[in-house]
Image (cartoon, rainbow, N blue to C red; front, side):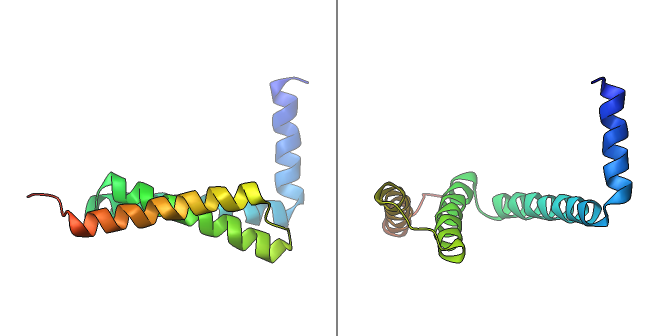
Length: 102
């Protein structure tokens, strides 16, 4: 299949499926908003805080996805989530007890 044939298939799918078109547009706008929010967060805090918050977000996404989809959470997943939550907690405690010097 040539590159032009692939583009023709894509154009056909784009024009014939409003659900595909709407989902792609919404997905793009959501990702753009997420990146804007991440940039504003880094400007207000620092990159380490953003990284820790992102780790906590991933844990919440894993747990919520398992609950919504009715999947069992295997011990390996639970251990990984526990390590991530413990790391976030330790970072918060250390950050409170030893504030950065100005």
